[in-house]
Structures are given as C-alpha cells and as structure tokens.
Image 1 (cartoon, rainbow, N blue to C red):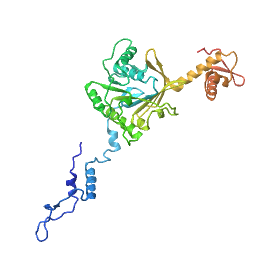
Image 2 (cartoon, rainbow, N blue to C red):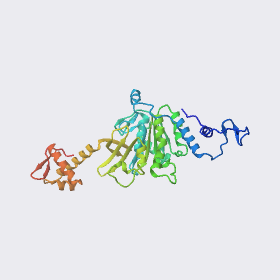
Image 3 (cartoon, rainbow, N blue to C red):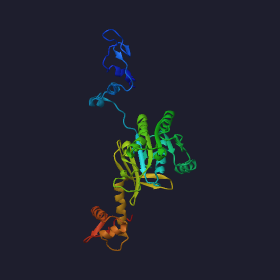
Length: 371
C-alpha cells in the first residue's frame, strides 16, 4: 500500500513552540495568523525541518520484524519454475563466453527447445512456453539462415518471437518487455543477445560495480515479478582466471545481481559449460558443438568426460608403440601433464585397462580395445 503524502511544512508547525497572537495588553502581535500559530519563514528553523522530515519518514515507512520464522514456515510457496532443468531456472540468468565460441547458437537452440517443448542441449526435456528473442547483433537474413539450419524439417515454432531492434534499458525496454509478457498466453523465456546493446549510459561518477548492478536490476525485477526466465548474453575477458566466473567482462556486480550465471569456455581439453546460481546446483558439464547442425550437445560431467578422453589417448598411444613407455614419454606423446598422467596410469592399471611391466614401464593389455 502506498504511504500517504505528508505536508512537511504543516508537520513542522506542530514541532514549533506555541506563540500567542496578542500581547499582555491585548494588542495583536505582528505576523499573528491565528490562535497558537506564528509565521515560519523559508529557511527558518532548519533543525526543526530535519526533525519533521525524520518523523515523517518514520511515520510512512513500514515497520520491520512483522513476520516471524514460524509465519514464514506456515506459508505455502510455489516451487521454483525451471526453464532448462539443471541450468536455467526462473529469474535472471547471465550467459558469458568469449567471442565466436557459439553463444548465439546456444541461445537460439535453447529458445527453439522451449518454444516447441522439445529438447535442450540434445539431452534435456523442457516445458513449452512463449519465447521472445532479442537478436540485436544479427540481421533478418542471417537469422533466417540460422533458423533454416536449426529447423531442417521446416516447421517453424509459432511461439517463438524474434526482434532485431529494441530500445535500451533507459529508453523503455522494461515496459516493452512487460507489454509482450501481458500479450502472450504463456510467457516463459526472454533472450537478450547481447547486454551491451541495451545497457544504459554509465554515469560520470558512477563506479563500475554500481553501473553493472543498475544494468541488470530492471531485468532482474521483471523476471521475479512474472516468474519467467530472462537469459542475457554477455562477453568474457580474454585474460584467463582460475575461476571461470571471474572471466566475465565487468565487475562482480553482474554475477551478484543475476540469479544464475553460465560460462561457456574452451580449453585444449574441450568446451565446458559452467553453471552457478541461487536455485541450481553448481555444474561443470562437457559440451560439444556440431557446426553442421548448429547444435550444442551435453556430454556429461566434465571431469568424467575428460578422464575418459585422457584414458583413450593413453590407450591409443600405447597401442601405437612397439615398446613399453614410461610415464614421461606417455605425457609427452599425449600432451598431458606429467603428474596427472602418473595418477591416471595408476588408476588404469588398477582397472585393468593397461599393464605395468617392470619399473615404470607400461603397455596396452591384449584385451584393451583400440579406441
């Protein structure tokens, strides 16, 4: 409920001492306006005006501590809606990655999956709903070509809406998105590709952190208000970091404001989709991109997939050698870390995948298939 407006000047008069309007001999006093009141000139009694402002704020502000823990536990709250289970819940999700890694393909395939009630990442079933894609770095010709590649059957989802132009966040974007949400029967996902195309201008004395928070605050509130997913694409820095979430271009204001952050990163071991958020378990999944179909595929837990890849390389190397090899030779031939190779060799011997001959010499076992 909106707090009532309070006239501070009138409120301040109640804090002023009463002044009689007539002297002891009955003569009217200058400036008298009525019983118990006297004229207050602008700027007069500034400390009392501050007291009035403070009292007015206290009168209009909602009191704290109105809900107990018991009250909270008695509430029946709806569960979090999932747009892509395990990766994108309701709320604001930020997807970051270096340029040309395939973020736009991932965004479009996800949008198509939700609009059709199909499969995301060639693996995850999703519920159907209306989707709006703001493809602000593409033109209609490029988008038409991309859709033709992603929809070989030719059936275009009628619940997928696409725009190549949109107002900025400081020029009416939130209201335009709200109008679309009110217009469609089941709004479920909004995709913004890319954040820099809709960001407001940074204030002259505004810190990077405050600017990043302000850039996402409106989208975050809109997603929470309507319980939909808003997926925003952003770039990551060229510099590497131990934590992939530290590679986002900007400050921690971005990841702190978003409910979920996804990072698409590629190394010599392959491409990984990292996920971290308030309503998902932290994920580190290996993914692969097929340029022929334009689709991303979820391969599984990155650690397990990488381990399988590493073991495959070791087996192939041993099969291709005419003599036993040492851990250092295997590491050099596979391009892997020496310490990691030694540990992997020990586990592979224990699993019966390879055989150890003598001191630090390894061969492929006869029953090990050529991978």
